[in-house]
Length: 482
Image (cartoon, rainbow, N blue to C red; front, side):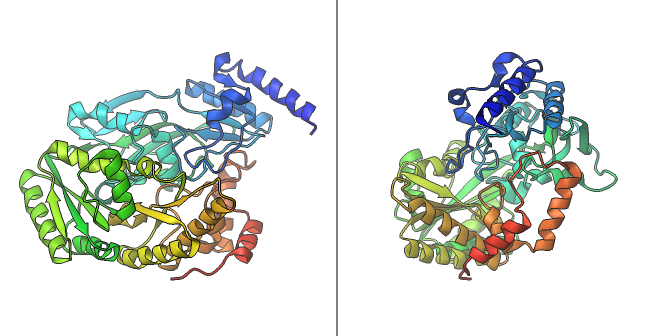
């Protein structure tokens, strides 16, 4: 197709989309499309053919029908806070933004559920449910901005997922529009649903099976009390060993997070959370429940940390200090952005017992690549978020960071973990998929994709490598230290 033919096709599609949605919600000029060229992982950038922002489910259906008839790929987009390039556009595709579907349809305090549209912010659900003494469990660090639709697409977690689970454990039902514009329902508001568990399949499917237009989430009672035990350690390996010891003691924290020295100092300079900046590692262990339970378990955790080598421990004295401790942790990503021109955020998961070993290996590889690393992660469930520090202005620096990140993910697989915890595969981790899955397993994923999307039009090129890519990636891969 010539450039003239592409321009004509784009203009005609834009005209027809403006018959479906208000004209100002079809974006066809490059400058206005610029905010849609990437998600939070900005090292992959591309402008789409068009951006459309429907306001109703009926409009979503009409957009999908039109694009299906015209064989135009569709990339669903939430708030753009994703970190795997899962919402990266292509010049031949339409970006379907769900930002305008942002209503909380209803909250049922007796059933402890909320019906919401995909553009609703994660934090807004808990804010709306608070008057009923309820909250929504999964709380990604970007919860002030990220959308629940994006959380479903990536199966997001957060600092409290250790006790309250990931998105997949907290979503009961979803309505979605398939590639042809038909409405489907996955899951049920009941305790169980007949047939295959399609809700679990849709959750984490990265927009490759359908466009989610409504979600029913599970709400939980707000705990009577909550406190955070902050413990400083003189080595990351000692702190890593302490994580497993807490769980082995029969205590299930609401959250158990870890930060290493560079992350501690960056977060403290940014948030003034009262972190000990001379520590090599920091654990944040939150206990919630009844006041008596919290007091007892916090005392046990403090004793346990001291026995395992903590150089200091503190327990939050009130709600304000608890919130401040978490502010430091949840500010870690932007805080690290202040100390390095660029950083590359990884996302892998490992068995808790391998924490100390993997952190030691990451430190060794950082020396090999001559790149800094700030480690911030959900230690309780083994979900690592190493932030690789680099300068994209230096020739070869970005490529080194990408290669280093890939080796971290391969290390996660080698010790019995996986290449993602909550960010998804997107474009970023396609090269590492063959490290975890065989060719036959990858083909089964393609079979599921074809069952929902025979034309391959939904978020193409994401999530699942082709078998040819698998062969190329295996040929290029290098062994990881394990």
